[in-house]
Length: 420
Image (cartoon, rainbow, N blue to C red; front, side):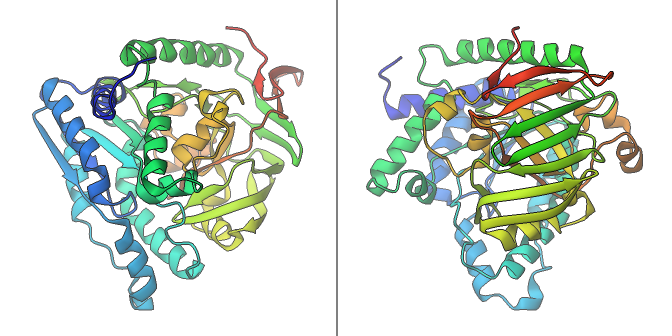
């Protein structure tokens, strides 16, 4: 471990984002997206500026930033006319699309208030979210096909920090959350980039093992969960590093502890119980269960945020089905911290999870070349949404089901049961 200052850690974080996450090539442009749902500008500016410095240092041609203010979203939900929620300003989307079409890089920085829209009319929140998803779908489609090198990271927003560490004074909470971010992204190690390279190798070994197995389904068993999830022919297990269509190898999430693929949209049966709260569209959904029949959500219940969960499922037909299945050991570095992050980028890397909605095209052999109908026919799912929720725990067992119906252990008590 090192005794670097916060500024040194921030610089190292930015360097890892640029070199490992995005792997920016000389001559590429970079667009940094801090849209309206991603935080408050002045809190993220120090990281944004360090990322810009690091990007220019490796030869980036131009770095641009789309700033946003999450409070504007809450104000709109509170005060805008009820018939106005189909309004949407598309200039930011147009800017991102132009850079994607040019083969440039995209960085998104998360860190917004998990309770931003809590207590507001779920009907209004649902309308706003659906309009955003519809307008943003062009970008989502490019991301799900890995058209360019992209990455999602986090910054310790003030409200987010207070949610994670409510017992601390605001400045101390923010400092502690930054420490957690640096630790879980390996920035506190003497050579963060070398540590990331070693981690990527380990995750890729897991993916290679599962790829060779070609299970036809997975069965999950845990308190409140009895669930069988089919896997389509040609599914691809992915981890950490991917190859973009622009020829750049990149790591889409920092942190990342998962190995993932797409499920068969028509084969999900049973009940799953969440093990972590889900922060969705500014609302916290807690202690919830989802029941599936023949691949489709048929029932949801939640102790808190049930209306928001139902709105999520009702977004479109694809939101009634699943688009991702990811395996994460219960002893991952993020889980070992022993607290919730109330942020999916982090909490999904503390627990096995599944995702409601859109599947990533690159998780199916040849999926990037398929149109929507062909992708659906192959078992993939198409939706405006892609929302991960966590179901893993130290009490979960997962079996891989082979073509002949026999089973073998994949995870036991939340840990890998396979050696690589």
